Image 1 (cartoon, rainbow, N blue to C red):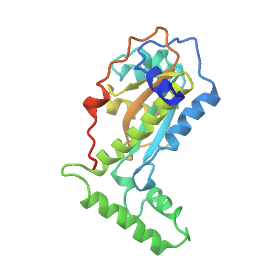
Image 2 (cartoon, rainbow, N blue to C red; image 1 turned 90 degrees about the horizontal axis):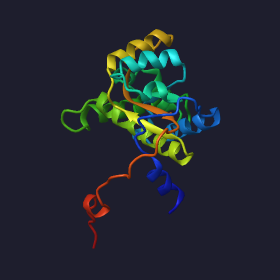
Image 3 (cartoon, rainbow, N blue to C red; image 1 turned 60 degrees about the horizontal axis):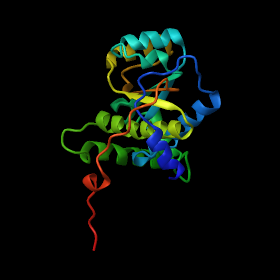
Image 4 (cartoon, rainbow, N blue to C red; image 1 turned 180 degrees about the vertical axis):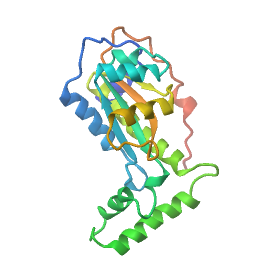
Length: 218
C-alpha cells in the first residue's frame, strides 16, 4: 500500500488524545501548509487558520464545543474560518489584493476592478438556488480542512474534525483574544483537533468503491 493510502487508513476521528504529547512546531506548520496550498474557487483562498495551544483558551473553547474532551486533550486546536460576504465587494482590500496578484501589472486598478466584478457577478448569478457567498466560502474552507487532516495522518499525527460547536460562542472567544477580529467578516467552518491517540481505533467502516462510484465511459 502506498504512503498516501496508508495515511488515509491511519486517519480516524480521534476522541481521546494523550494530553502529555505535543506536536512539534515543524509538524504543525507542515499541516497548516497543506491547508494553505489547498485549491479554491478563483484561487480566492477564503480561509484563515487560528491555532490554539493555550490551555486556558482551549478550556474556554471546550465549553462552547459541547464539552467535547478532545478540545482540551489535543496538542493543537485549529479553528478554520471562512470569509463572509463583506469580503467580496469591489472595495474589499482582500478581494482586490487577491485579483491583483494574478495580473501582469498588479497596479492596474482598471484590471483589478474588472476582475473583482467578474467574481462578484459569479457569486450573484452563478451559485445554485438558495446558496449564498457565505455558503460557498464555507464549503471552500472544507477543502483546506481535508488536506490538513490528511497531512496530519501522513506525519503519523491523529486528528478529529469537530462540527459540533456553538458558532457565536467561538466568535466571541476569538473577538476577546484577537485584536481587530470581527465575526462580521469571518464565520467558523470547522474545528480541527490534532494530537496523538491514547487508544487504537476500531477498524475503518466505509462503503465499497463499487457502491460509491459510477463510470460514464465509451
